[in-house]
Structures are given as C-alpha cells and as structure tokens.
Length: 584
Image (cartoon, rainbow, N blue to C red; front, side, top):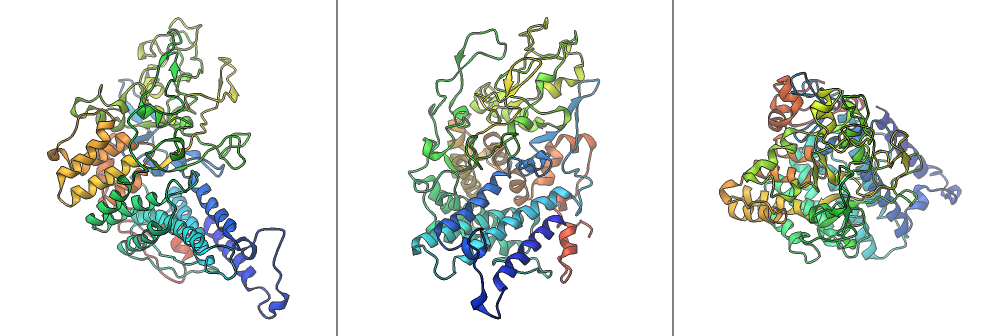
C-alpha cells in the first residue's frame, strides 16, 4: 500500500531526526534552513502552519490536487449512494440507464481502492493532529497558555472530525492518540462506541478553548463547529439530551441565524435568460445568495456559515494554479453537458455562460437520482413553493444556443435532438449551488467563441452550515420521543425555504433524511450520515438508480465499509480482523 509506505517513511524520517546523535547530545545539529520537527514547533506560528496544512487537505476532500481521478473526492458527498448517480442515458424506450464508476455495490470488497484511499486519508490527517497535540507539550515554546489551549483544542476538534468518519463508515477501528514515531505493525481495533467516546472527550475540550466565530479567521473551525459535531457524536452514543444541549449551544448563539432576506454581493443580480433572446431580469432568492462567491463566509455577513473551506484564485496556495490543477471542480462534474447536444440537422450546441458552466464529459458526469431530482420536491405539493426547487436553484430546462441552428432559443427536446436517447444525459437537473454565476472566462471555446472556466469554480464551500445543526437537534428530539420539538426545528429550515410546515405526526428519520437532501445536497457527507444511521443499504435499494435497475440484493452488512485488505496485510504482528460479511 503506497500510502502506508509513505506514512512509514515519514515516521522513520521523524524518528531518525529525533534520535540522531543520542550518544552525544553536544553533537546534535538543529537545522536552520529547512523545516524539521526541531524548528517547526517552537512558537505559535509553527503550530498554526501545521493546522493550515490539515485545513488544506480538508479542502481536497471536495476538490482535486492532481493526485488521481477527480471523481474520487466526491464519493463521501453521496455519489452513487441515494442522491447522485454516475453516468446516465436513455434506452430506446426513454428509460434511464445508469452507469457505475465508484462503488460497484454488488462487488465491493476489501480491495476497493476508493475505500482504502478514504481510510488512509483520514488516518494521515489524524497523524498530523496527533503531532500538533503531542508537540504542544515541548519545552521552550514561545506562546501563552491561552494560545496553547486554543491550538490544542483546534487539533482535538480536527482529530474528532476524522475519527467520526472512521467510526461512522467502518465501525471498530484502531484508535491512535499520540504521534507515531516509528513503524508499527500491531494495531488493534477499538469498539465503535469507544471511538465516539474519545471524540466526545476531544470535543468537550474543544468547546472550552476553541476561538469563537468572531475571533477565528475564515476557513478555520470555530467553537460552534465543535458543539455541532458534539451533537452528532452524542446522538451516536445515545445521549440525546447531550445532543440537544450541544446543538442548542450553536442555535442559541447570537452570532448565528438563518439568512431569510436577500443579501450580499449579488442580491441585485440580473440574468439575460437561458434563451439569449429575452431582456435582463432580476434573478435569485436568499437560498441562491447563500452560494454566491463573496457571500459564503461568516465575516461576509453570512450568519449561517459555521465552517467552510477557502478558495482564492489569486492567492498562492488558495486552491488553483495556472493550469487549473488543484482547483474546485463541482461545476465540472455536477452538471449535465447540455452544450454537447447535436440537433436533428447535425449542428452542435454552443458553450455559453448560462449559469451552467462547462460540465466535463458524457457518462462520467454526476447526476441527481430520481429521489433528489424529482421525488423529494413533491412532498406536500411543494414543487412550486419550496424556493430550493425554484428555477434559481435547480435548472431543468435547457435551450439550443447555437444561432446557426433552426432550433436556436427553443428548448432542447428529444424530438429535436440527433440522438434522442441522449436527452436525459444532456438535460438532467443542475443544482445551481454548484455553479459560478459570473465566470472569470479563462478558457476560450473555439466553436462558440465564448469564454468559460472549463468547469472550475472558485467559491468557498460549506463544511458545516446552521440548517444542519437544526436537523441534528430535530433528530435528537425525535430519538428522545419529542416529535413536536423535532417538527419545530425542521420547520425553521422549511419556513426559510417557504415550504409547507410539517406536523409532529409527519416526523420520522426518513423525513429528516429527506430534508437533509433538500437543504444540504452537495454539502453534507451523505455516506457518513447514512452509515451512522444504518440506512445505507435501505436507501441504496430505494433510491440508487443502478442498484434498482440491476436488481441487486445487498446484505445489511454493507452498511459498513470493509477494512482495506492492504491495511490488514501491513499490520503483520496483529490480526485486525474484518467487518462481518467481507472476506479477508
């Protein structure tokens, strides 16, 4: 396993630095012209640089750092779970045909590379957090007691953030709480409940000492993020009252509120329309505003942003390079490639900035399932009421944009396409939150003469947003038997969306999952949510297009991922075992 070898090499390197010249301390050399353990953790700035490196890697949980297939990083968002499919087309009768690219649910096993990559990624970042926590106990560090407590609290929050994923998605996993300084081959797995308890301990410390949102720079997690995560962990531990209290600490914080009125840099935005023939008209609503570049940080006036990633096109290390590697690619993957459509006369559509950008390619794109694209919006007859389903936030109509086509300005329909079976592929719903409203125009399309950003966007992106906190508290109320208060919290989110309120009798876990899909798609870590609830297999059977079409019968033990076989084999001095159902 390449990643494990890399980690071991780092451990050996660090150990050699720490143990070199032990026989004669007077001969020990302290490097001064490059970073090393000896000179990196000597003051607050050194520790903050180490934290920044962790945040940089968190950003790559959404984007791509030129390390492999871009689509890998979107797996934890629910791609090929219940809400997104990879690959989509129609058969001769107009029936959807779904592809498989990531999980292959009937075949998933301990050799699955994407399972291993996620596992390795989390443990790499836990290692980095452990280094910060352990090194904070060094002598002669130039910082105050308060600064030390804040740094350690942030590192413990981040460690809990990653261990939460591991426990939710794998169950029992090795628990490592100190810096590993030499190769180790005898790890054992700790019960899932103990992992959650450790997360709770870390988060309890974090909620005491982390900076509040008004003190913390954008992109770094504030104290409210620790309370939010503590709410989820308490649910996992069955401590529903603790979960309610932790969520309430965020909801009752005067620093936070749901945005209910138009705000920010594009509240007066106008759009010429998708046909290119109409006059400019006012565009957007408050939900649309939430996803506009320049609106997504708390310090930009967005009071429901708790924690997000940061992208800055012009800043070195800000998430982009000149060749577009290491950039944010939601628009490239989460939109259908309408601009590749060919009309009945053989004329190809033109790429233009239509609040749809430049999706990447054919059957490799990510498409909403029927559940996310259609079903959840029909609840209580809210299709035309729920602003999250408005034309500003989900695009469902596409037009011929080539002026040389006799269909120019008309809707793109099966009957005017050269290949009717591609209609679904070209016109699947686009969730506009994944799109940049105003592009930089960094790439020229030679066919249309129009500029685009080749499907890259440069927005910040949410990791935790206040509506999720409300939905966590609703879940805790439901699990404690108080459906009335659960409904009240769900209705806070629905009222902002102008959706029909729910009643106590409506509330169950499925409703909460539906509301999470409506509000948090392309934001929440959907796999983690479904797996901690034990609902993944059920929702695959109900909503995953490929599973339904291929009539897979998946066993319940697939509610957890397998322990990667490469990890089991590398741990040669102890048997890690395997999750039930999977073969070693």
